[in-house]
Image (cartoon, rainbow, N blue to C red):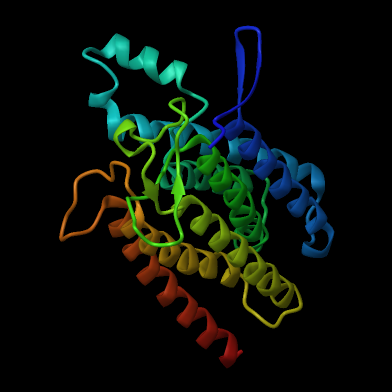
Length: 265
């Protein structure tokens, strides 16, 4: 598509970076808009957002580097240089989620914020920001789909894109847009769930558990259409699918337990 938005001398501005930044901004604005109804101070949420975002970016990059480390060069130095030069792209979402969640709960505990209520507030924002990020993936050509002969396809021709050169000029599944659309839909569902939770009609923690269930289902499905390197397969499933399956089982179990407890009360 259009991996480079514009050139300014030797400086290039990647479209991916713009979309990721837009996603973070949309997520932050959403969180702040819901701060007062959820009973939080914007000052506390600002610190929480900052450390969560920074940790999430670091974790996403770390998981990407760990997964594809051997492909970055012949030795450690060249691989580190490659990671530094390509920092604007190449991230693993689950890595960002794990590191971001760790920082989220640590900072939230230091500020004595209700972890379940705070998680519910962040859940819709997470899916909203992710939806923008996947559009960035589409523009950059990363996380691309596998070849298809169906009517719903996209053809990448820009050699600067992250698509495997062997796939340039071939119809591929627009899997990035599928996941983006799925995340926007999840956002709408979670926004409704948050309203019901704040009104006392759903238990605390329900929205974040629902997010985990819905996104893991979306990611598990999308993986079948991915054409980029998915890592070592086990039982016919990619690492992301195995993680998604585990998360889905845990999330659905948590949802059932929370709903049962809420109904008893």
